[in-house]
Amino acid sequence: MMITVAKCAPQKFGHAIEHLESLANDLKTRAGAATTRHGIVATGEHTGQLILFQTYEEMNGIDRAFDVYEKSKAYKGLVHDLAISVTLRNILRIEDVGLKNPSSDVPAYGVATRAKSAGLELDRLRTAVPHFEKNGAMIFRYCTILTGPTAGHRLLVVGYPSMDAVEKTYDTLRGSAEYNAILETHEIEWRNIIRITG
Image (cartoon, rainbow, N blue to C red; front, side, top):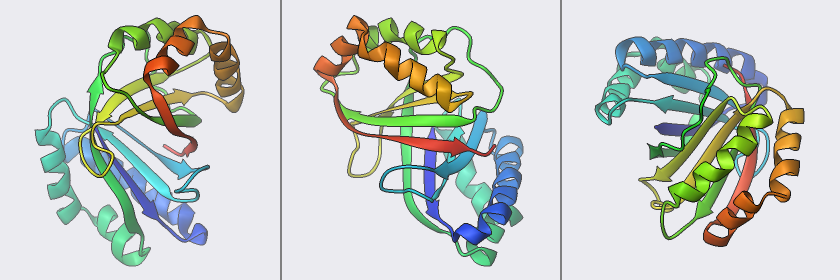
């Protein structure tokens, strides 16, 4: 998976989202992206910035994505016409945690949590997945960050249909033995909300 975060003037968000839609289509058709999601970061260090998620079946897809950036009118529109500036780009490896029924629908919100852990602790993560599922999680991505100053840290990205579903999930997790066991091995660095736009 590749995540890109970029600054954009708020008055240009409408045009930026249109360009991101076109870019997402380019990445699917020309780079083979399995999924793409984009939105606006609502909390934390990058509040008010655009975010683009791309997932690929293999790392070669990321190489193809950079080729798409060079030729895509949508990408050129973002960079040249709207003057966005990339503030963060990371490549991540998605770990299989066994979400039983992931949805192909577009979530309304995403919650991204970055943490440090000595090991993957996949078995512990899998025990908590049902708590997310029962409260409406549509996608569940547990990743290892491969690039940048936080390489080796973990990123959990979960998509939800509403803020109500987010609240219910964390209310449930607080009283969950499985989740509290995860906190014994994962040091949470931050948790942020993303408003998904497509």
